[in-house]
Length: 294
Ligand code: HIF
Image 1 (cartoon, rainbow, N blue to C red):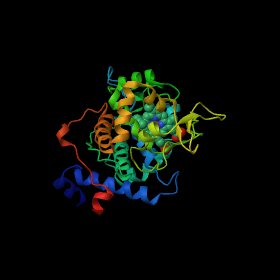
Image 2 (cartoon, protein in one colour; image 1 turned 180 degrees about the horizontal axis):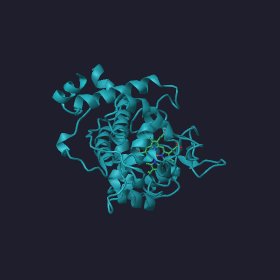
Image 3 (cartoon, protein in one colour; image 1 turned 180 degrees about the vertical axis):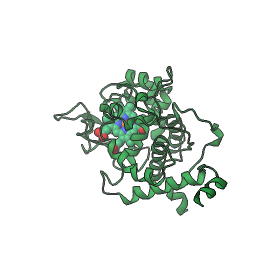
Image 4 (cartoon, rainbow, N blue to C red; image 1 turned 90 degrees about the vertical axis):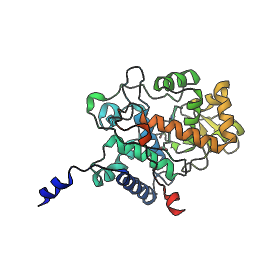
């Protein structure tokens, strides 16, 4: 009987409503599992989505958010990906509940959900990623090295296809989360509200004084006023470099401009390397918990 029903129904073709359900499930889990880090898995989910996408190389078309190859040891063990198992494990029950979604679509959807649930802008999304085997793992060294500066940032993000303005807009994501000594070796959060997306990262970069932190760890900076916040060498490069700095100033002044540009560039980051069958006009915008409450 079940078989006959399957025949009349045809194969399951998930639609917007089905992905919105997955979004809701992730949002609910984020709310429930609040005993992690600063009270949310949101930041580490954003980092997972970005580290899948940021391996993209426009010359060869390799890497990017298609494939979810971080499931496999070579890529999962890359130094830059230390700690992301927490994010992948968090999403495992969601994958079990919705087996039809690919890991690669799920991880990016989780990044979108986390940004929206941390009060960021809407990030339009389209599915179409498929999981690939271990042979598609990218070589180590494609993600940025925090000890470097502007030349390195332009080389790494230029390889993905991003310009100066886009590098700065993306960087606002460091308003979220923190560094962990047992992951990257660095320590501390960038802002006082690491689970809410705001333009505070830019404000702090221009308004605060930053000094070398004296400690037994890699070179990083601390705010002179409270010594509780941090910046990486790559973060401070954005105010040292004139071309970058003009955008830091702009986003520090104007949160709406930051949100608009951030949404545009994250959307592109999350789509790198994906052979979509649906056009750009088929992107969906998911309702967040805040939209539902309104
Ligand atoms: Fe990060 N980033 N990132 N990053 N990142 C860390 C943590 C987060 C860089 C280095 C680090 C981006 C760019 C760069 C997030 C999101 C984004 C950590 C700390 C390091 C060292 C990891 C740890 O110890 O747990 C460098 C060098 C980048 C190039 C500029 C993106 C723009 C800002 C692309 C981006 O979206 C998030 C979120 C976190 C917090 C993770 C957490 O677990 O809290």
